Image 1 (cartoon, rainbow, N blue to C red):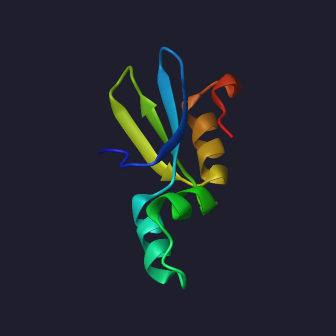
Image 2 (cartoon, rainbow, N blue to C red):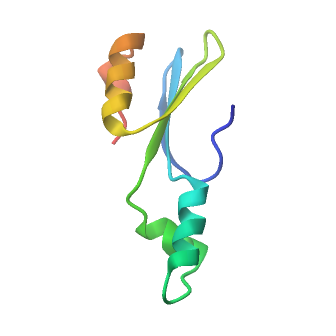
Length: 87
């Protein structure tokens, strides 16, 4: 599984990578639905919809995509430290 395009933040330690991204298809949909033919960059900057991914480096596993509440639940389940919380 891959995290496609538009990663807007990440944080990591020796066990996990936490990535925050804007789904590529959401940006394309926004461009198509725009009344004023916005560019990809404009739609990217205006997007408020984010998804999160967890990559467990030790066992080469990827979890996600998650919305923020689901991400926090998965943190608890996997024992991910609070220091890896991404805003």
